[in-house]
Image 1 (cartoon, rainbow, N blue to C red):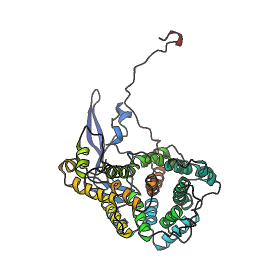
Image 2 (cartoon, helix red, strand yellow):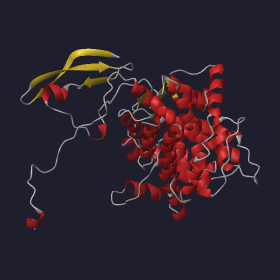
Image 3 (cartoon, one colour):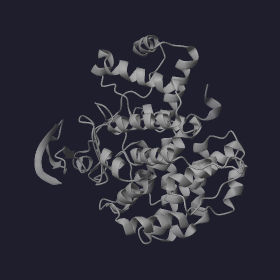
Image 4 (cartoon, rainbow, N blue to C red):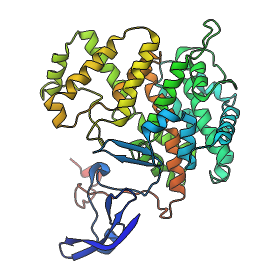
Length: 433
């Protein structure tokens, strides 16, 4: 990162010319440093949604939306999906480098050792109604970990990183599976030492005493890759929430809970669920692809084509390409046809060659195919966002730790443009009309 002193200037009414530094990051992208703008001039910037605002410096994730590039710690997402499993990528995000064989084995051991939940947490699960939303259950259970493991309050998370962080990474998976079991009224299935991270999750989800379930290798592989695709995505809504809450010196569990709640929204983690609901509606109503395209283009029609376009990517989402192939692999293994996948493939083909969509950069994003793949694996729609949270957890942890070591170390506190009334005098209630 290079800082060019006084490389730009802003002309402000009543203040004249104000010099600002220009920062060039490691990928050559430039930003304007306005950290002292209000102190020096009394002015602030106005940027709804923080579209043009860099809230931090980070070495975790790089995105180039115009070129369709996504990298974790310098590694291309396709390269990681091809050559690593989710545990290796989690290690990379949290510790900054890929593990060697010995470190990978040790990390797996730590994950297995910390995968069990405190027995008393079962009563918490059983207190939730069966139709309670799984994201609400997950948020509550992750937050409760700070009560069951209070020693975290008294130490820096990096003081014993392999305990505090690995504990959360492992237990999150168990919490997610137990949430599914509670929703369906099933007994809880404990994690087993001989299963991998993803195989354990699928077994805890689907094993019963009467089905002799063994996690299919194709599903284990697909889940590994899907979790990698979701592991980090720069300063998105949920990651920003984790960093913001962490900046108040809240503990790791509280900060991650904030991320879960932010991810819950349909504009963020709930998008793949919206895609599946849309495809199901197209199927149920017998809509043709022509009708769907016309409805999507019409300003008068409330119909929305979910899974197309992205806040950052202005070309094909690199994760969507991988997710598309995964959906085909899982489908091929099942030996079945799937009408929802057929609808999705035809929608993508039509939209990718339609001037209306191309001119607006409305390409399929990662949510368009991940929901279909989860669906073919037997995972219910209500659990899609929970699996998104499982995948995003390593990124949340990495950003939490990075913020804790940020030299700036100020609590997040955005400014605002006030649009309310001027000063008013309170009229006694007896005189108010």
